[in-house]
Length: 599
Image (cartoon, rainbow, N blue to C red; front, side, top):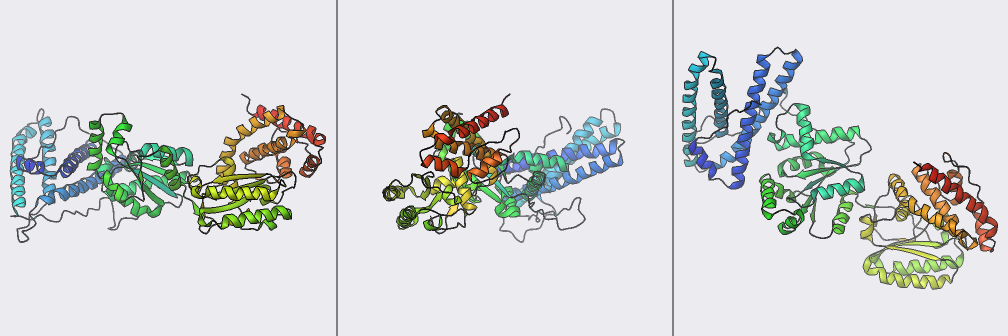
C-alpha cells in the first residue's frame, strides 16, 4: 500500500448527516467507507505495478487477477455503504426525479479523485504537466463535494430518488451464475462458537479439542488463509456470502487432507450475516453454539475493568455478534459450573444416538438355574419402575458366555435416573438375598446424564461398546440413547487405564498367595487386554487374550494354565497348585512392560 496516502474527507453536509445516524449504522458506514478507500489505494498501487515495470506474462496475469478481486471488493463495499446511505432518503416521494448514481458511487469517485490529487502533487515536484493539473484537480474536488452535498440535501428532503444500488458485477467470470460450493463429504461436523466478550468461546473450543479430538480453527485465520490463496486484499470487505464460501473452501481443503478428522471447531463468530450464509451452505453439518453469560459474570471472569469488556462488546455487537443467538442451534447459559458447561459441550460434540440392543433372558446366559431365577426377579423389579430405569445388563463373562460358578462375579450395569436410584438399591438388596452367596454381585449405577456427558471410566466405556456390538441386555427402555463408543476411543482409554492396572498388579504380586490368586490372575488378563487394545487387537476370553498377548513383540510366551484349570483349583481350595505359573507370567509381563518404557 502507498505510504502516507491521504485519508478520505467527506464534505460537510454529508458528514453532519452521517453523524446523526444511529451508532451502529454510523460505525458500520465509517468502517465500510474506510475500507472502500483502502481498496482504491490498493487498486492504484496494483495498476501502477502492472504498468510501470517489466513483468513476465505470469506476473501480469497475477496482477490482473488481483485487480479483478479488488474491483469486486470495491463494488461490494459500495453496495454495503449504500445499504446504510439509502436509509437517509425520504421514501414518501416516489415521483421525485431519479439521480443517475447512488451516494456510494459518488463517494467512490471522491475517493479516487483524492488519490489522484495526492499522486499528482507528488509528481508535480519533477513534472511541469502534473504541476499544472493540481489546481484543476482541486477545483474538481470542490465541485464534486458541493454536488455531493447538494445531492444529500435533495435525497433527505425527498426531492431526488436514488437508483437501486446493486451493481451485479462479474469480475473474472465468463458466466452469470456463480458456482455453488458444497461441503466436502469428508467435512463431517463443524461446531461454530459465538458470543460476546469473555463468554467462554475459547475455553469451550479448547475443551472440545482436548476431549473429542476436534481440529480447532479461528475464523480470522481461515479468512486470511483464503485471502492469501486467492489474492484478496481484505476478506472482511467481501459480502457475507463470499466470506462463507471462503470459510467453507478452507474447511474443505483441510478435511480432504486430513481424512481421519471427524470434528472441527471454528471461533469466534461475530458476524451474524456470514455465519447465516455458512449455515445455508452446510446445513446440519454446521452446528452454531452461542455462549451466553451476564455482563457482570463476564467482567468478573475477565479480570479487567468493566469499561474494557464493554468496549469489546461494542465492537462485536456492531458486527452482529449478539444476533448470532437467534441463529444458533444451541444456546448455552454459561453462568453456572464448569461441569455443567462441559456436560453440555460433550452432548453437542458427540451426541448420543438410539442404539439397537440385543435383549436376552437370564436363562439364556448360561447361568445356573438359581442365579438365573434371582436375576429374572431383579429384572422384573426394575422393569416395573417404568422409565426411571433405562437399562439393566450383566456384563463381562455372562455376556461373553464364559461365566464360571464359584469363580466369576455377576457384574451388573444399571442406567437409572438419579431419582430412581433409591428404588434400585432396594431391588439390589433383594437380588443379593436371593443369590444367597452363590455369586458375588458387583453393581455399577450410572445416570443417563453421566453417559451422554461422557463422564465415563475406561471400563464403563468398554462395557457400552460391548453392548453396542451385540452383548445382551436384560432390560432396555424404548428410545434409549447411548454415546457411541468407537474402538479408537477405547484404545485411548486403555492408555489411561493401564498405568493404574499395572500399579495394582505390582501390589498384588507383592502379596501373592493362594488367597490373592483370583485377583492376581484377573489383573494379568486385564493388563494384557489393555495392551492388546493399544495394538488394535480385540480378543475376548482370558485364554485367547493371554495367547494373543504372548505374541506381542519382545514378550516371551506366557505359560499359564487354562481358565478352567485355574478356576477349578480355586474352587477346590488348591490355589497353590497354579499360583507359581501365574506369578511367573505376571513377573514376565511386568519386566517386559518396564523394558518398553525405559529411557
